Length: 127
Image (tube, rainbow, N blue to C red; front, side, top):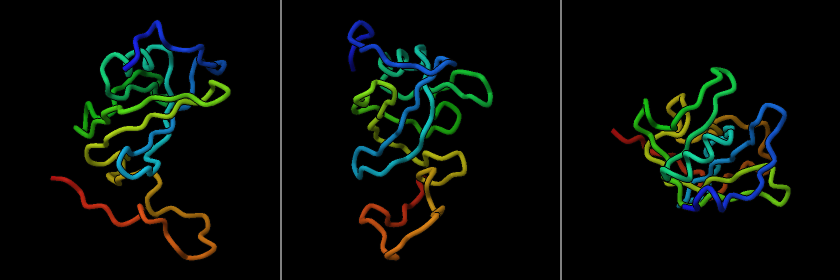
């Protein structure tokens, strides 16, 4: 992981947060969206696991600290405007607090063709 001195100037919002899209390393599937502040970004780079800032609880948290479903960061990127992060991770267990592998499981607004992408096969739960 990069050292803090190598972090580019990330554009945080008025609350000091930047959205972070979390994507599975092996499939490319989007697992979740969370927010980071400067402290959680630094902690993610330092530890190699994801750390976020909860807007609802107004607190800093390490994904997996309670559930054991950690996210090992393989790559951490930022977009062309430096206002969104992309964490590509190896997910252990479920990413979603509901127990689903991804926060986007089973909730579709539309599927015009009725088809599902190849990575959208049912996941088995560990344990």
